[in-house]
Structures are given as C-alpha cells and as structure tokens.
Image (cartoon, rainbow over all chains, first blue to last red; front, side, top):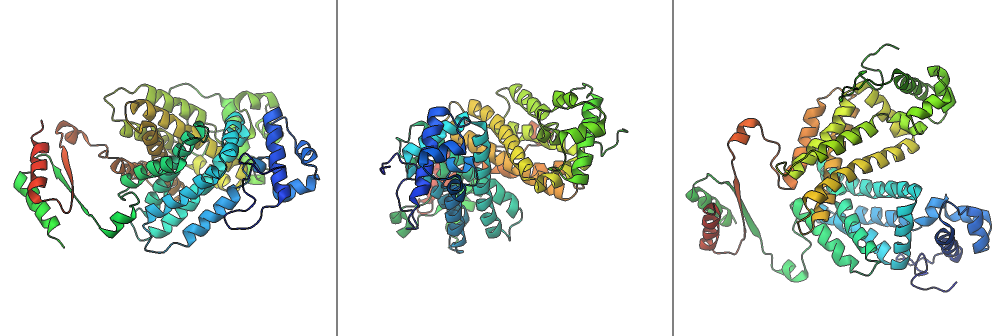
Amino acid sequence: MSSSNATPGGDEKTEAGTAKPPMREALIAAAFQLFLERGYEQTTVDDIVALAGVGRRSFFRYFPSKEDVVFPDHERCLTDMTAFLAASDDEHEPVRRVCDAARLVLRMYAENPAFSVQRYQLTKKVPGLRAYELSVVWRYERALAEYLRERFAGRRDGTLQADVIAAAVVAAHNNALRSWLRSDGQGDSDAAVDHALAYVQSAFGVAPTPGPAVDEQPDDVVVVVSRRGAPLWRVVQEIETTLGRD
Amino acid sequence: MSSSNATPGGDEKTEAGTAKPPMREALIAAAFQLFLERGYEQTTVDDIVALAGVGRRSFFRYFPSKEDVVFPDHERCLTDMTAFLAASDDEHEPVRRVCDAARLVLRMYAENPAFSVQRYQLTKKVPGLRAYELSVVWRYERALAEYLRERFAGRRDGTLQADVIAAAVVAAHNNALRSWLRSDGQGDSDAAVDHALAYVQSAFGVAPTPGPAVDEQPDDVVVVVSRRGAPLWRVVQEIETTLGRD
C-alpha cells in the first residue's frame, strides 16, 4: 500500500513523532475500501482482516470495535487535547485556550482531507456511526468544560459558564468543520475555524486572538452602556472617568 | 397500579389532554421496577412484559426498543417543541423563543420529579443509555438550530450563529436540569433554568425575558464601543448621533 494523501491515517509519523504501525494503517485502508464498496453495515471485521491479510486478533489489538476503525485518530486527539489543557497556566485566557484546544481537532481532520471527506459521507449514511460520533464530540466537550470549570472555580455560576462556553466552542468548531467537509476539503479550514471561534470569543467577552503587532501595541477599547433615556452629560462623565482611570 | 407522584409517566392526561394508554404506563412502571432491582442490562423485554402481565407485542407497540422505555416522553416533547417553534412569528425575538422552547423539556422532567431522578441515576450507570440520551439531546439541539437558521437566514454567518446559540441554550438547560436532578428534584427547577438561560441571552445580546411592566415601557440601551486612544469629542459625537437617530 503506497502512502498518498488519500491514505487513511496520513503520514507514517504522528505529531508526537512516534511511528504508526503499518498493520494498523493497512486495517484502516482495507476497512474504508470495503465500507465504500459494500456499505458499512454489510462489511464484517472478517472481511476487513481478510483484505488486509492479517488475523482477527490483530484487528482487535488496534480497534475495540468496527466503529473505532472509522474514527481511528480521536483517541490520540483526545489525549493531545487533555495534555494541551493540562499544560495551561494562569496566564492563558481560558476562553481563548479552549478555542486553541478545539483547533487540535480541526487539525486532525485537515491532516488528511480525502479521508475526512470520505468518512463524513459515510457517517451521514450510517446511524450507528452518527451515534458513535456524538459520543466522541461529547467527550471533547467534557474535556473543554472540565478545564473551564477549574479555571472558573472562584466564579459565581462558574460551572454554568464553563458548560455553556464549552458547548458554544464545540458547535462553532463543528459548524466550520462541516462547511469545510462539504467543500470536499477544498477550502481554508484554518480560516473557517478562526472565523467561527472569533464569534464565540466575542460573545463571551474575549477579543479574538490578536496578531503579534497588536500584541506589542495594546489597544484597549472602552465600552459604555447607557440607557437611552440617560442625559448626555451623564454619559460623557462616565466616559471621562473610564478614560482617565489609569 | 395507583397513580402517585412517583408513577413513571405522571398524570394520566398529557398536556395536550389526550389520555395515556394504561398499558403503556404499566410497562414503564414494570421496566423501572426491574431496572432498579436487577440493573438495566440484566433486565430483558420478556422480564418486563411478564411483570406487567402483557404480551411481547404490546411492548413493541409502544416502544421500539428497551432504551425507549427509559425515555418514554421525549418523542412527545420533541413534537411539542417542533410545534411550538413552528407557531412562532416574526414578533418573537429568536433567542428568547428557543429559550422558551427549551423550557418545555425542563417541564417534562419537572412533571414527575421522582421518576426523573430515578432515571438520572440509571442513565449515569449505563453507557448504552448515556449514548441514547446524547442522541435525544442532539435532536433537541437540531430542532432549535433549524428554527434559528430560518430566522437568521438573511444574516451573514446566520448558520454559525444559529448552531452556536442552539448549543449554548441546550448546555445551559442541561446544566440547570442536572443541578435540579442532583438535588433529588427538591429545588426550584423553573428558577434554575431561568437563571441559566438568562446567561445565554445576555451573552448573545438579548435582555432576559422582561416582566410585563418593562414590556410596556421599552427602555432601550445605547452601547458605544471606542478605542481607548480615540479623542473624547469623537466619542461624544458618536453618542449624540446614536441618541438622535430616531
């Protein structure tokens, strides 16, 4: 089996630099070939191992079930995400941090566009895979929410805010991911997810991730909220106080 | 079987006023009795129908699978929610409307606190039920998102905003619901969900549902956003223009 962009699992090296076992890659490739030819439900694990030329036990060494071969990289990605969040410190703005964590998932899909698009087509057609995907998405969402709950531990409504923001981040990510998948992986996935996550960041009071130039020249913004009925002098006084504060 | 507050399914009448078939109620009660005594996995449909004193075919007339007997009212609630959203008009502020739609789900749980708390305990322990619940939650979220997508059809980023807001509403609802379930259904579920949904409404620029007095006296708010470096006269000019606009 030659390694091409369409090869499920992509490069032989993962981001962590560990070589992926060729047998695992062969099983994924065989599974997808059969799923696309015969349909997911009509393909058995026996069919997959016969095509890959390995024994049944080899399959189950790598994949607990037939569903898992469809989403072979989510466990690694969940591990990477958890490690990324665990490596945070108090300097990291929490909402921005979970947005950056969500980008890891997009990167996994974007590593291998042809495989991701194939899987998207398959998942839409097979209810069992849809259910499996929901359980994976839920695990990502819980990882983000757990991190935010810790960061918001001192806040009133900390768990509420953590849960809502985690769900919003996942929904924005998935909206961008699906747009990109529907474009057959042709569009700019990074730009799509940046745009989607900027919406969440603005809703929850965080400026979108700034570029380096802006980092060097902090350019604060003053927001004044006033009832329409308030006299103008009162509004001006408020602005003056705010501008002169530091 | 006497009808008590702890009877699964609650009152004999649904909100729509149609009588629930007693056999359906008997099957739910028998199923829960066995799930709690023996465990969910150890209970078969045959066990349930034997205890309820009916035939196997009666079970499958009401419930497609064993999972469905655990969540007997979600289909009705999804139908109610879809009807509620379909009955909206342009006067309804869209974010507030989906929050009101989410309240229908909470009401279903609150109709029968003892049953809801029992089910919560069961669902936490059985992975298959957790997966089933995720698929139900996903259907609620899609119903809210579809409504918002229609309402936001003219907006740039309308589908992104619809998906994010729907996810945030569902997460806020579920946060309040779980708090209430963990209190063994003792707390004020309406107050908890109102509080949680108010957070989402404020994040997405909607004032929380006002009381009638406020409705009669619209009290608009002016928001001015300015860079800290902007000259004061420029800010004042902007406010004057905004205040004088209508």
